[in-house]
Image 1 (cartoon, one colour):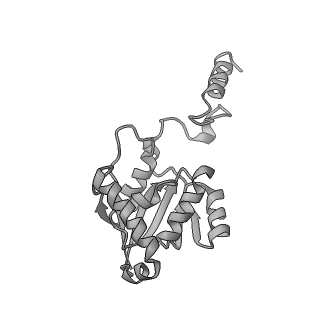
Image 2 (tube, one colour):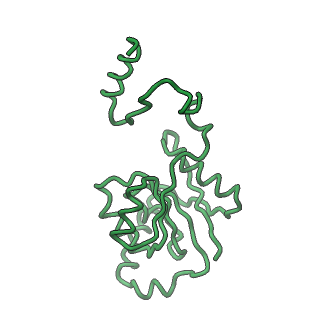
Image 3 (tube, rainbow, N blue to C red):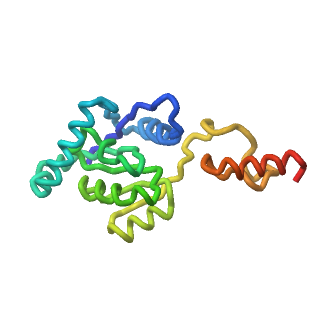
Length: 186
């Protein structure tokens, strides 16, 4: 089976540099790139809704129309897998998913079934286990860090004297408390 990877356009302020690192590393390993088409435009939104509707109405027929000898590896957030595949719906889709928050699970499950995915990569180990249990598909955990050069420079983690490294962007108040304690010598 020939496997392609979708080379998605990175927006100016996207935090997902690790996903682009994953795409770049895959291309270096020999995956052929498929380009992003019509990112965020009206055409993509219209065609995505049209394709979703057609695939839902004609599930068995759609399965017969799929290109069986070509697969597409697609990076996506958990809530917009279907639109991330645009316009390559006829390929066998292999998602690499980040941001798999519980609020997105229902949408993600619908998209995985609709796209008939039987292999999924995720950046959260527990989500890989959940997908295996809930959908019976092969799900594998791949950590986000591909190229360490994209992260803040410094010593390896085991060489650092700080015990708390980060609580995440959503916990700014806790990060501020930790920073104050560290500045006071705690």
